Length: 126
Image (cartoon, rainbow, N blue to C red):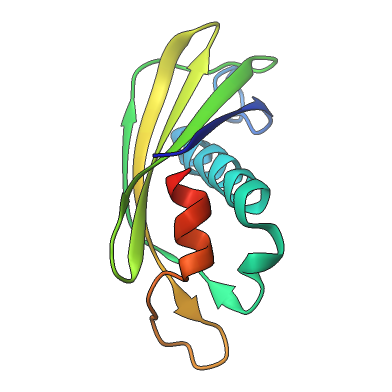
């Protein structure tokens, strides 16, 4: 399946601490996944939603203010109405977190789940 790498900037920190709070990691996962989808699908996203219906997140190391984080995104499964991504976050080549998300494709007008569009399939499988 397809994949991509992005650089993220560490922003939000615990009050009084130097390390990044655990509730910020999902934001990094979301940012990387959204950048990946925009890059791959662009205008083909218009009229569709892709809400996350499941997320697993494993922490491997802390992040600190000023760290640069590389995020890798890969589509690992394409179902009928959903797709799964794996996002890896690393600092200096060392893993800090891994996430697995499942998104459902949705018609924005009706709010109903729909089959993954064929145009998406071609790009997400590339």
